[in-house]
Amino acid sequence: MELTEFISGLINEGNVTVAADLLTFEEGDLRTAAIHLQQYYEDDCREMPHTAPELDMAAALWAAGYLYTTVQFILLRNLDASLLETHLPAYTGERTPAAIYSADLTLRYLPDLFLLAKGLSPTDPLIARFYQTAHQWPFSAAAIPLTEQVDLSAINDHPSLRQAYTDRIIQARNLSQCRLPENLPLVQAALGSHAAVLWPQFDTVINENIL
Image (tube, rainbow, N blue to C red):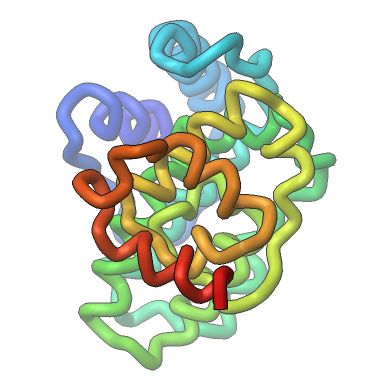
């Protein structure tokens, strides 16, 4: 029940344990993990603005497994980088609003792991995989500075995701994401007349656009 215990520890205690070897999750483990994710979704969506997207269990399970294995690659320094492609596969489904939110139930911890991994070894090939995942799942990576354009259409077309993503950019003080044309007016509207107090550095972005 490795994945189930991982999800339970992540949600309830904020502490996780992983196996000392890369593994494939058993069917019974996945079924029980799905029950935990369902409950987590039902609790979490009450805190979302507007109406949260529906649950996409396939995306939620993929993300939980992805996060589990990411932790393994951070902690088990003997793992070869050649294993990244096999054991951290990209999501093959469509990144709909439901998939984005469902994956975020666990992928929202990605920025914390990114900082941890970067602190341990800035040149680790895992860092490149973090950036790749952040570009594919920007909703969960609002705190990771990205230098390339990302597809925000599925986020900005959904009221709940759009508002939550804007709030995350502000909370993370992420100027690189704030500068994106799709995000700037949303951040500006959210901050309103309180921008100088809530985020003083935001003025630099406004001045750049004026100039």
